Picture (spheres, rainbow, N blue to C red):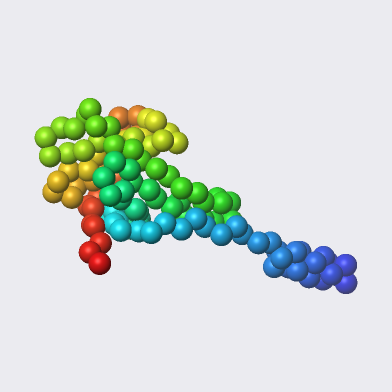
Length: 119
């Protein structure tokens, strides 16, 4: 019994010493509110050619930066098309109305609305 108590205390002590790396930070000037209720902050470049997201951090995911680049040749009416530089088959369409559609391999994964922050 004493050994189990010492083992439990040792595990608790080691768990307390685990340090999770700090999440990358971005200077957010916009956000997307997805239909599932999640809001993701992002940085929209001055030209609008890139969208930068800071991936959330957890114990199992160290986080990181996700960059979507505009596909200039694919502009369709009032919508702009972006692709993820990390996963080329991940696309995002953003329309002038603020409607956002996230697609993976042509399948709609999520929809939402864009908000640009005014300072």
